[in-house]
Image (cartoon, rainbow, N blue to C red; front, side, top):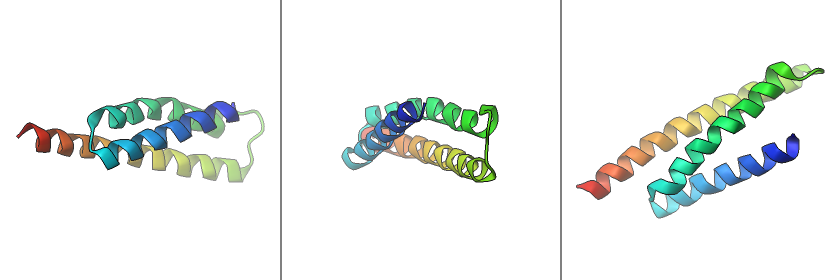
Length: 87
């Protein structure tokens, strides 16, 4: 489970970085699509794991907040790129 999380998170961050640097929509959209499974893995770590330490709860909550903010910022950046290249 941790390996799947690590691969998804690294891919998501790489795609977001690539989309931001090249100002293209496709990597940003891929990053936004990968945010859902990453958020589900954070939710699993937060609520569905059998043994959860208080530190696990805090780190998973912080991770969920960051994934949400990054997705929101990726969406606003994608809209700005679309408007800049359209007009």
